Length: 248
Image (tube, rainbow, N blue to C red; front, side, top):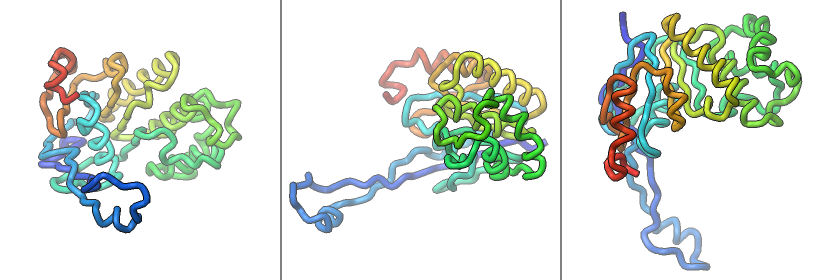
């Protein structure tokens, strides 16, 4: 069976603007623009990674290591500068709070709108909307525009919508960390159930206790894979590495 995720020689460069000389107050903006130069900032460099179906993989590493960039590549938010990314199956990204949600629409409407963006069928989404809202614990706010929701409420709604409807790949970036203990426990139970059904889970969080569901860890450092293996082995190596060695 083909793997769920294949990244081969993947590199991502952002354009970093620099000003060649310190700005002088009152200097015309056109002249300041002329002094700017752009240089590449490599978020990922020649990264290769294969993830099998049903694996729960934790991405660890310091800020700026490339974890969120990799998740956005897998979510097809953008394309790599170089290399090849293949993700097989319906993908449910939960990587930005509120991303994909219509802040002026109600929670019930967002189940259909956001669910459709993720590949769900509108009719099935409408029929299951109340169940999704119930799982998120937002029954009292079903008809409230989500723009007035708290961070935790947005997290519950986004996670509930994304993980409904049997996705094949789920991408999670820090969202579980903003919920309360009860939400985290239910979310982890749902993730375990999805993995048991063959779903592939990629999770990023600086809260180590939220990564313990993983069976495998990938340590990213300066956009490259530094270690890849059993969760506890890789995490211990990362946490005990000298600060200078992990790029912080």
